[in-house]
Amino acid sequence: MPISLVWLSSSELRFPSQLAQYLGNEAPSRIASIGNLDLLKSKPIALICSVKCPGNIILQTYDLAKKLRETGVPVIGGFHSPMEQECLRILLRGSQPVILCPARGLKSLRIPSEHKTALEKGRLLYLSPFSAKLRRATVDTAQFRNRFVAALAEHILAPYASPQSKTFELCRELKSWGKPLYMLSNDGNAALIDLGAQLIDDRFILSRRGAEKGRF
Image (cartoon, rainbow, N blue to C red; front, side):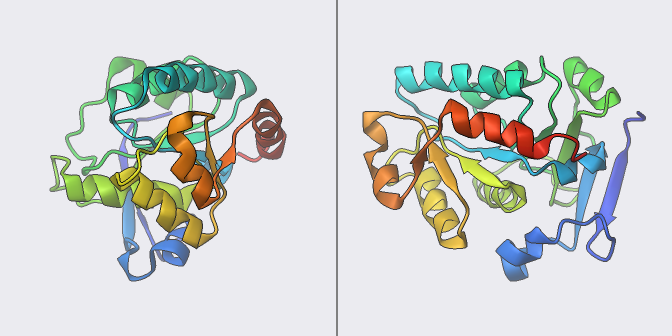
């Protein structure tokens, strides 16, 4: 599959309608893409997490990424923090769809060689709601990117969200959207439990594999 930048307008049938549904007036009128746009149909799980996590949560998250890879569950995320980048490396060793959303425009974006293989195989999609002129991520673009990712996702997985963090506030907003929110079992996630988050387990992961089979 050729690796080239393609713009998708909100007037096109392939444009994801859930962006307007969840982002309202903030929804982009077009999005930039590199890769297989059919992956937009895969109904992925969004991976979002606080930058600083307890050590045991980091190990649990890596194990969870391996389970998602082994069961072929589609995943979408910014994959910016060191932990998220490691999860991306784990996921790309599998065969399931992965959607990567940088907090910047895609023009002049340097694509790692290991990503090019996944792009060519049609299992990786770069997606961005930002202008081609935006070449650097900022705190504001990262926050909007996370909302963009969540709007596109079927379910939200927040392995850990530190209380009073931006990630926790995002989780609060996503619950108000009615998005199913999942987390890992950890004493530090008591606030997420109070918010109504559910513990992710093998049964849920296996159910997502069955739900996505043959969808893209």
